[in-house]
Image (cartoon, rainbow, N blue to C red; front, side, top):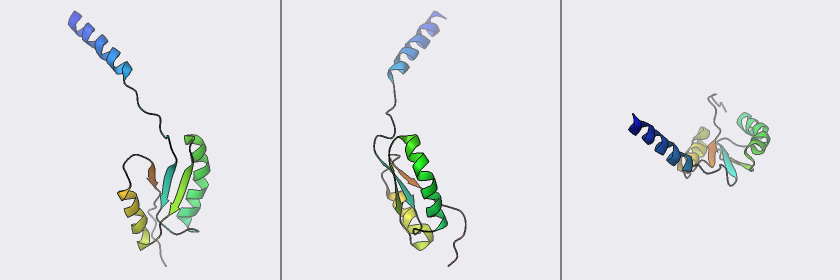
Length: 96
């Protein structure tokens, strides 16, 4: 029993040394896979200001229209997986 108590205390001591980095440390990119002026773009522009204030960093909107959202989605998929690129998509069909 004493061993378990000592083990638990040592684990707690080591865990207290571990900490995560603050996020975000630089601007965040919000990819909108549709052209400017559409419903998804309007929604992105409505949430970007409160999101920037909440994160404490600027959020940059990048419209990557084309291919019914495929171009922007592929761009987000190719982005570095560091949490600084967000894709804002939708599930509604887009008709010409």
